[in-house]
Image (cartoon, rainbow, N blue to C red):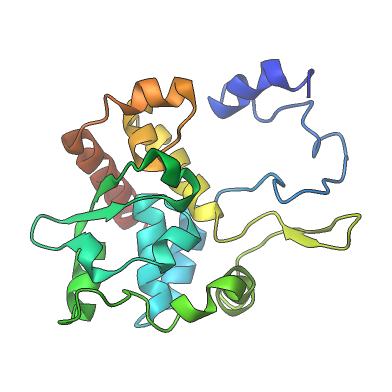
Length: 229
């Protein structure tokens, strides 16, 4: 960890291809849920969206890609949190619930169209009613029912405790979104506005995130996806 620390910012910024001292590069097996995740490529996102066309998974993937939020927070979304007229989703991340901070996330056109097709009269209803009851097992269901059949490539690792971990999972959408926002030259302050990070350094930046900048960010994501087709 001491050796990898100085190289982490360089790897994150793309100055070097990879951190030469991270545990994965050194061949150290991780016995932790914090295994290093890889972001989905744009092609993989497109493959999964095509495979899940017309299902709740399609909407969940669009939400994950465009908001960078965690699976548990997205699956618990209710229609009362969605303002279709002003194109905003409001999420209070469970992981940082103590801060009682709600993140207003802009809705791009592609996601807005999907939500409009699904919208009903029950404001308190879940956006993903068939997936929400399966939340506990949803990460594994996603791997088996979406990633594998759509052709996403990933590595499997068995921990000392016998737990199966993957180099890519639903959480890779969060990595993909934040990585592509950075590649689109979206500021750190705006990226922190999407991610909701609560470390002191990230909070200082997050406090300056504006809705106009976040909307520009989500539009950049949508433009990159459409140009890749």
